[in-house]
Image (cartoon, rainbow over all chains, first blue to last red; front, side):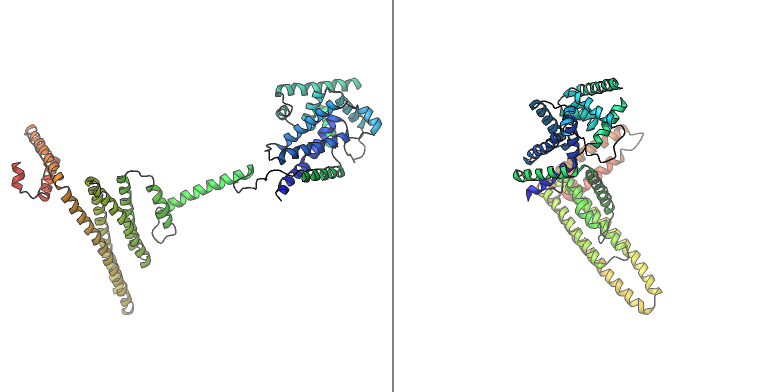
Length: 169
Length: 307
């Protein structure tokens, strides 16, 4: 019975944040299946944390921190499979878009490839800032860097994307 | 560049788990959570744990409580026995003020103030027409409680041979009783006048009821005066006791004072021979002290003048 309260709270957080963590994972890993696994693993670790009775002040920040660490682990463990390769082999499809085909789909695809080419650290902060909508302060805390470093890194990531983008146009 | 960020946001919006995917992960998590149950007792929501938003409501409630309590206790200050607010005045306001006092004398003064307040209440009650005898009775019983407290203070001072404080408090008590007696008598006269006027105006049938009410009223007033008399007796007895106790002491000090004053008047006479008479207050004080010495001492006036 006592378990029910904690579990209910836990599932509530899952319903609330699962999509956000999934989004983060997709932009970081460029792999839908891996992203799904990462979501599950993130919430399992989160449960391990809260079920020990540890206090959580900011659930969202904690979840991103766990996810971020898992992504880093993933990078360390395996060679990154390129997006192009993935699309050829597995038929990569970001999201579950049921809307009619967007006219500038090509542009989006290219953007994803460009993001994937970014150095890992830039990709991480760009994802957290512009995909997850975290503040610089929060990103700094999650990645254990100063706010200044994070701001510069975000700026460089966007500059790089811009350069890449201009190459094609 | 803006375009890039816009596209990233658009892509992000599209990226989400399918419902079936979400549900299957959820099932996995439930299975995991059940296999690894929480090792702690989740804190039951205590009635004192408030969420940020309700904190504002709480502080509002507390503030309202303080304001309401404050104005309530303020409103209660003028309440009379029989009033809803009267218990607040007697059981909350007054003990709260009394609790701040430290010294015996302060406490005695405060209890004396309370007796005065009770007396004033009784006076007000008997002044108003529609006071029930029960309420009057209660008010008088309450008065007795407070006079007992003052008496206790006087006795305590007496036991500690603190005749100065005992005398001061006793004097105040005496004054309060006298003022009260005067008020009651004045009111009785006014009331009797009013009632006789009424009785003469009313026809014979009504007259009898008016007269009986007057009788009752008189009984009541008599009882009040009897109570007062009892208090007076106490005051007189105490005064006598204190006088006997402090006689030797008083005599000594008074004589010293008297001699001082005599000297002062002499000096005053010499200095102001042509201009003005000796200071009036000094003469009066001297006279008063002499009188007191006469009363308190068994010696003859001659003895004093010889000294």
